[in-house]
Image (cartoon, rainbow, N blue to C red; front, side):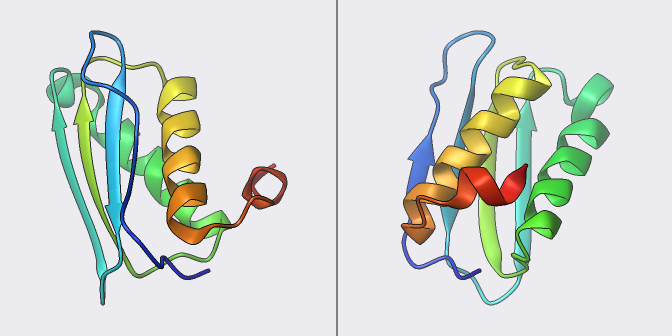
Length: 95
């Protein structure tokens, strides 16, 4: 799957997460989190799992986490990916 444009999902409110994605020539994931020491590895694992399922290996992802639950991270990332690929069937592909 190809990332064709920049996209954003989420907010910077407490317990939420803002994810920005853009096209790239490589996989580049940057995580800024208020709970990075405790959950940074889990955030990265979840992101890589979703990207792997969708065969995305060329993308830049900027994550600003304010303590979001895993389900929120997943929803925000998938939303940003849908917006960046314009593929409305992505929800079905990730199941």
